[in-house]
Length: 52
Image (cartoon, rainbow, N blue to C red; front, top):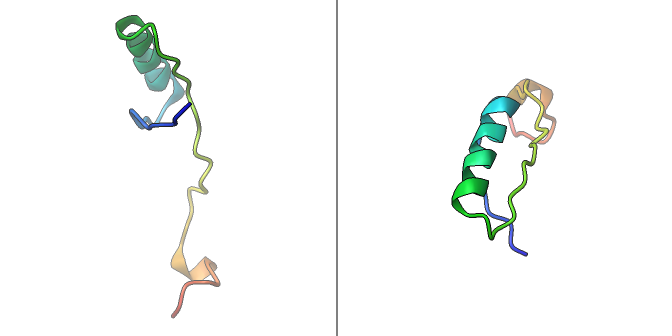
């Protein structure tokens, strides 16, 4: 099984709607929703690894 990103969405309902369309168009493939849990607040001042 290979993982490929086919879309990125800001809200879950948009992702689920797109998933339903994909499953109707290509019923022989398996699709799933995944979440990226990157912190929203990523200032360079708070990151000790960033050179100043």
